[in-house]
Image (tube, rainbow over all chains, first blue to last red; front, top):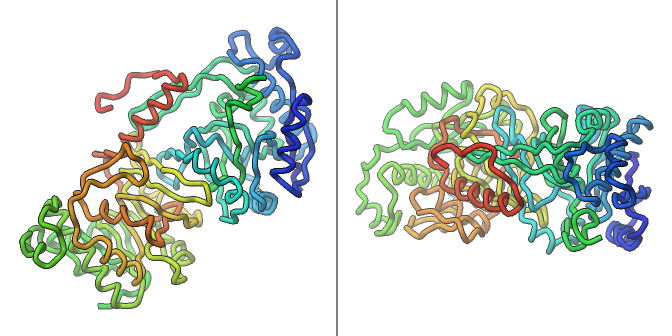
Length: 242
Length: 267
């Protein structure tokens, strides 16, 4: 069974307790999150995590360092894993569904959720241009219990863009690619193009950096998603008050 | 008239055989049921009002009126025939494995309508799972669909709840669904049509399929993903899509995104 590793700061045990309560019966191992504020910015630059022009907040640096550490561990172990942040609700059939979907081996990274307040760009069928899926974030926030109890089969769709690192599976070969493509993390924005609209998405977090490279990866998302991140600014340990 | 399973009833507003030939050329090997085309404008508007097909204030143009008549005729046949019907727009390009791909989703009597093809011009609002709903915005303004690649697709589709979709180019309808559409849509009126639950988006009721879209949320309506049919034509219109792109641009700007290139003149 693919290990499920939950990122949690030492100073927020209440979030881990809430995660366990929201996902009863789930076997997981805790991964002690890196606290970005505990080291000077220069140390992260010296370590090769970021470049001098990187604009991440200390929380975003810690988040990036945590994910990068898990990618390195994935490569070292040569074993895929699920990376999960501690504000995520998993569907109760998460294990069964993900095991079935990951029978295929042609993937680098599979997103089981994304930030629903931001569109997911994916290829809706062979031969078609990418489409944008904009979910209703308010609706899911009102129906977490129904979401968790759902048994709707999911399919994997190839993605070109999206936000969030709430819950994803990463293969050892995918982790190696992401490490090579992302590090050191600079300030290059992700470009979003849909219709006549062409936008720069400022590189303010590891999710933006990863999304920059989706087209160079075999990146997929589950449709419908098998997890939901609360992604609440007020309680975020990345963007909110720390 | 009965409809053989796995044949397409091609609905067209064309007055001649060219529409059928066009469909056959794009979709070789599929049997086609003809007979649902009319000369646009051949039925006087006053006669349609009197027959209860449209209201007096209906604003469909002659072509759209004829398209509406085609589909109403198909629904009426379906309602009394007792079998499901695959209905395709004359412009539809259909995946080559259509019969096998669609079969699991229309085998049971648990649906009114299964939309399996859209013209990609307007978004579809889809219910993927409890709490997971949203709009799927297609984009063919940059790249037209590659018809050959699309038709060779083999990814098994999944069926999701369809809540709104103003532009199907292919659907399978059950007798129960046909009866519901006849009851809900006819006579076709003129009310401004809100785009599902988005208060900021609405469009004039100028076509039968826009009227149909109003009622999917009250029906056992589904859409397949991946799609099994598309229309390969340059994008024009995209009224609702443009609305959502503007909304997305507003959201993006709120979140500090910057334009990296001036939008095209039509934006």
